[in-house]
Figure 1 (cartoon, rainbow, N blue to C red):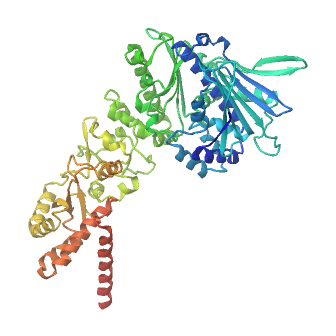
Figure 2 (figure 1 turned 90 degrees about the vertical axis):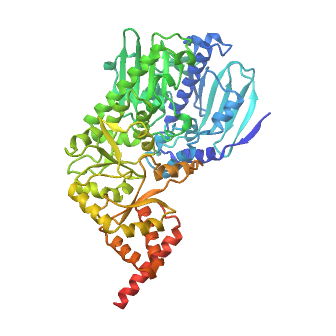
Length: 639
């Protein structure tokens, strides 16, 4: 019985964009289908090794293959594999739904780049490679049978609003994708005849030569059927590095990740001795759209044993803060039937993980030293993830800290836009004892902060910490090279020399009455009021306690539905600012208490606005500002 099922809304939208917006690189559909078939063969072998499938012979790869068949007259191309296949529910989950929390972001990126030559780079990042079939086919059929099940399933769609499902008889497990190809349009760039055997040979050689299963092409020569193997089948990582061209590394990376871009860095090495293994790792060039998806917060490196696929996303191979790294590790020592539970307690795996981590850190350090511009682009994409290592990993905390790049107040001619902690420490004046930093929602907000004023006057550099993870990192990383990291908007500062301190204390004594009046007026909203050693140009700023949560953290907790008791902060006043002098005058005028109260409210609101926050009552604050502007205008007219 045939059943018609509508596509998920996001899938319909995605299909429309893929079909009508990708005008070049249409050949990638074959790369995607071959990669899917290879994955299905890997999974069948893995399940056979674990005893999870009745087909024990599948553990022997000799009978596994991917086959291409063409019928030029009917304009049909078939991609067939004898892998693990899919059940009915798996067909619905994999072909009718995009069950990824980042899908909306993916669609937004597609829309923004619609018609752009850069659009293909987005294919594959959310398991949407299969849908690229509709760039070349106006009807796609998928016949599949899950290993261990009695019946198969046929999925059919024209890439419109729905698809059909029906139960079928299928003799053996595996999947056949049947593409009813559109007519070739010679004038359209990237449009090729995918029923031509030479085109198929060219595309397979270009993208899939390293697939370790034979990719067979079945052709008719008169009354004789010939089967030609199109790929070399030698896994790239098993070959000596000096024999591999960069383009081969790049194509394997694209096969592994479905990323259209070439990798930023390729790391290929072999370890022999007590533990023997080969690693082929890649640093991506561009951040994938699902990088911050909590469901993807795990290693993305595949584990092989003696060239046999064991598991993808092997969490024991890589710490979570290196989850953007892609690649494979092939061990010669682990047992073929190794389980995840065994890996968690395997001393050899811990040694491999440690060596991989060290190699990656050294590679990133070299890139930072030798290609600062390229490294800055890499850091902008993956820095927030790398910083997690400063929180989670005590062993590598200092190494990751050396990799970190920070914006800040250092802006000498010819200097990089960012700085490292070692560079910062090397520039510190002799009299500076601490590393100064400011948490802010953005670099622009940090540059506007009044807390910077005294540091600019004294020539002390301040680092800007603008990633949400920074506040967590500081809980465990509070010093570098024995120098304390000091947040400049927390606690009291002691930067004045003796003469300046004496002058400030005298001024505080002189203006103590106004301080007391402001304290009384704002007692409900601030913890204390004092004169500031931070300010030179602004009238006021707010300062937190040493262990208070920042406004950014409070906003984050509120968005997550976690409410914390409000912590009052200290209001610091600039004793030499005209606004504070005017406040003193108002405090002495007993007949204008309302004017003094409003001035205090405006001063607090201004301090909040200067740090990117909102006054307690924005509408009232706006009204008070408007009234003051009108009052000033009236005074000017009378004058």
